[in-house]
Amino acid sequence: MSFAPSSAVLGRIDRTIAAYPERAAALLPVLHLIQGESGWVPPEAETWVAAKLGVPPIRVREVLSFYTMFRRGPAGRTVIRVCRNLSCTLAGAEDLIGFLRAELGLAGGDTTADGAVTLAVVECLGNCDNAPCLQIDGVDHGRVTKERAAAIIGELLGK
Amino acid sequence: MSQDAVRLLPADGSSWRLEAYLGRGGYAAARKAVTSMAPADVIAEVRKAGLRGRGGAGFPAGLKWSFVPQGGAGPRYLCVNADEGEPGTFKDRAILVRNPHLLLEGMVIAAFAVGIRTAVVYVRGEYDRVADRLREAIAEAEKAGFIGPGLFGTDFGLDVIVHLGAGAYICGEETALLESVEGRRGQPRLKPPFPAVVGLFRAPTVINNVETLASVPGILARGADWFTALGRPKDCGTRIFGVSGAVRRPGLFELPTGTPLRTIIDDYAGGPPEGVSIKAVIPGGLSAPLLRAEELGTPMDFDSLAQACSMIGSAAIVVIGDRTPIIDVLQVMARFYAHESCGQCTPCRVGTSWIHKAVSRLAAGQGRPADLDLILSLADGMKGRTLCPMGDAAALPIHALVTKFRDELDRAVAR
Image (cartoon, rainbow over all chains, first blue to last red):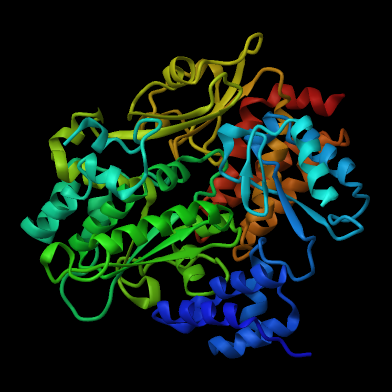
């Protein structure tokens, strides 16, 4: 299996590499670009990136597995990140997380059966005055009540 | 220059755009530094102002700049720490969103002072949308000649790279941040050599927090004496205090250093909600050992909090109400540090994970009588025995919580 990003993403990758004094420094941004297009970073993309940046494949694997935002498996079309650190816990994050899981019909895993939504429970999102908070595909939502959570989920599952 | 120009956060409803920033007197301090001052004089002014780092460690910024060897060929770098991972902290986000040009102006001044031509802003991955604002501001500044080559008609120039992290608390530690920019796992480096001598791409490097750099234009515009007249003698100026948790009006409040914790909570954040009293307060982000309600008179500056056996850290205040079981707080802490330990040093890697296991038992009602002492002993075993400050950042708040709320925890174990 071989990997190739779209020509648009390839152009962005080449511009990113050119911006850094050393090619290997583009590793995190390049992985972000690939994940942004594919939803995750498949194994064949790891070897592609290693060759592109002139680093050993193990270095790509190390970075990919170290940083929690990178995914080594497919995710839902929409990714919800919900915070469970202190300010959000004080504002009822555990209840909110339980509610989201129930609304999404998640049993064991973190992705809905139809592949629509992945729920990732994360540490602090730096939006603590708006606790409890979450992000939907990177967009911040704060002071999320169960009513609002239900509306958000309804919209995501309906589309 | 208007009063608003020296505030880190402009008044509500103000625009972040370049035009509005120039209307507030923006980029005048950078112009003054670059066109009329010697680099050494810029460093001297910032040293005289006693500006201490706003990221957590509180190292004097001007002193840090002065450690970069003078002269010599080869590049040197400025890294801006916008990783803001300390739980409870949301101030740098606000500067990036509401006043990005203030940061850029502070970066231009710092770069000029140290002889730097390239800056990297390390923004945490979760702030990608926030980073979009910064990218837009950089584009505005480049177009207007405030970023890029030949600034203010001189041969000094500065290029800026925005580098996105990917979800690792440890990358807020300055040498882990350097590793991450170089495309590696965020595992801290052994010091010395310090980054001022051997930093990014092995070149001399200055690493400053967003709020620290945003404080620099005001110092250059109004002078060090204006800055030292604010706040405390050994910790001058204003800080952005972030308040969250059990208060009526959570938010950010820009106040002189040394403002008492109680004043910030009651007068600015509205105090606890009706029927709730304060059980404990974390004064400087999750890693700052918590204070009990009777310690709320503590002034919010480096030395006062050190005396109270805590730290001002990132000045992120989290208020815990009396209805919150303290075991819930301990559980959040234990889980967080176990998750975020980079794994390099055994005391931190194993210590945080054992503490997490013991705390999880307690929280599930299956605690053993010896567990609390085990947690204290593990925390003691981590303190001062790791390469970077993360070991202490995990051990100290956990040790303080278990010690200060031992009675409540003992009752929880006995149940």
